[in-house]
Length: 148
Image (cartoon, rainbow, N blue to C red):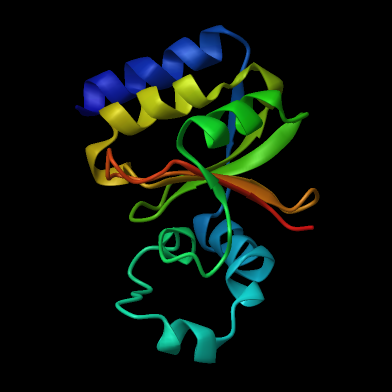
């Protein structure tokens, strides 16, 4: 799997997408500031079965209303995106992705397929305040959310 993941990343780099390593905790904290902070702790506690184990539970438990599945893929593909961050839920890897307009939802799916220990992938722009999340659950998501 690690080899397949590295090959998938290399294929994206060969297309001109740049992955600049960045400090993961800083990026995850920016994501939390943009999105998690929109939901009160009280609302999280009152949501039946809500768990903060995964950040994407904000969307799967509908604490934030996101578009999902094919509509999320379409919105992500149509977004004007020059650069954005990419990080994984349970990995220390994080990147500033440049030439990001070249990256599609299909590319995100391919990364997730090959990244067993990194399979919850968060793409987001703290400037434009949007996120595209590909979960490890094949039947849940992906999600796209933009702060109005």
